[in-house]
Length: 71
Image 1 (tube, rainbow, N blue to C red):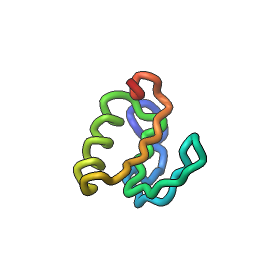
Image 2 (cartoon, rainbow, N blue to C red; image 1 turned 180 degrees about the horizontal axis):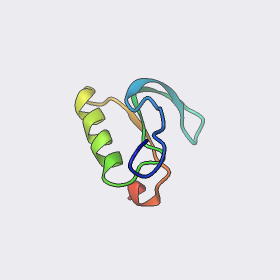
Image 3 (cartoon, rainbow, N blue to C red; image 1 turned 90 degrees about the vertical axis):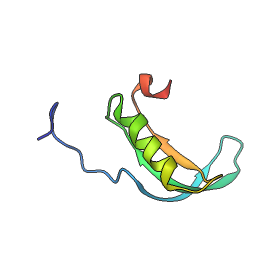
């Protein structure tokens, strides 16, 4: 059990895939970071780690559901 409830099982730094942008175009994603359900500062730390692991110009997709994490 986690500190504030049951621990979710997610792949926090999974390999990428493809993402569809709002204009309908598709881009290759090098890394996906799933921080849904996490609060600050964890999403920022996980994003920083993922950005450091991919090469220049690579796309990192970050999924959050906490409004303060989007800022």
